[in-house]
Image 1 (cartoon, helix red, strand yellow):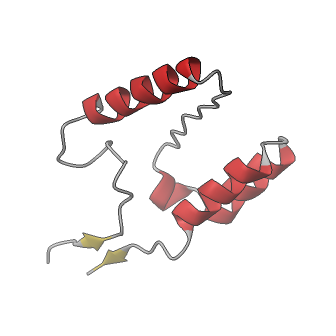
Image 2 (tube, rainbow, N blue to C red):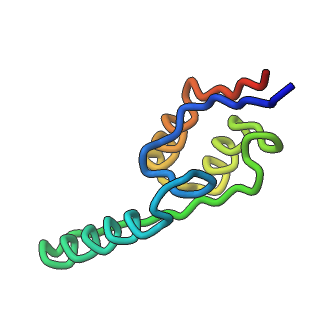
Length: 91
């Protein structure tokens, strides 16, 4: 039988999907940097790339690792929300 995976994907995700690659996200990042500079605001950027995250890394361990390393609680909550109610189905 065919393996079918169903998983909600964040609309900003660009890896492992048929899309315009990273170009759209890079343009968004450039706009955010430009706006932050113009408005003299601080901007934090995080790139997360976890190899084979869905089949090898427990999502709770990712959260715990961020907390243990002193990552800003707002960032931890953002990552927690990305993983909330995410399920993979193989049939």
